[in-house]
Amino acid sequence: MAVRSAEPRFGVAREGWPLVLALALPALAALLLGRPLLGAAALALPLIGALYFREADGEFPAAPSSVYAPLSGRVLSVRRLRSGPSGEPALRVRLRVAWLGGYALRAPVDGQVQEPAPGVARGAAWLRTTSGADVVLVPKTGFFGRGSILRVPYGQRVGQARAVGTRRALQVVDVFMPESTRAKVAAGDRVTAGRTALASLS
Image (cartoon, rainbow, N blue to C red; front, side):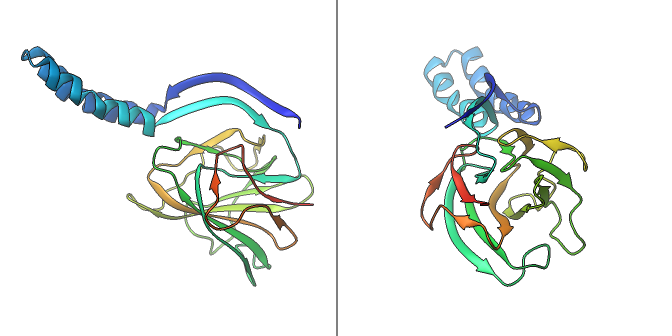
């Protein structure tokens, strides 16, 4: 299978640094007070924070006809609906987002970012492929509401598996695809962002 390359790196999302640094303060205080064992134990807090906000690029499968998982986690359900975000019948894959599965939201397809249709849940990410297929990501639940998960402007073209947003505190996300899409996962399957194909558009 062809491979789409990205610059290999491991980093922490910019918006995560304040929390990571705040979590490091107890460890620093313990070390300054001469409590090295307590300080070492407290270092687990910023480490967990860094893992939550981690952003890692690498090599991703390149398959224009596939719809890849935008986030890592587990498939909760795969259903065909009479009406999706566009008002047309759709295939919906619902994902439970892994807590330490990475912070970057990855584009499931090559496509152009569209402004969500009226009535679509706030924070949805709408992508349209060159063949005209609409793939819509709708955030369902999160600790801090349903703010936008997308970080690119409407009209911009994005490459498959590229980081285009952040998960924030997202717990569940729905991935809507055209009704003709063929599902490649089932409820209970584990998926990895940018690497596991949820479905095939052809």
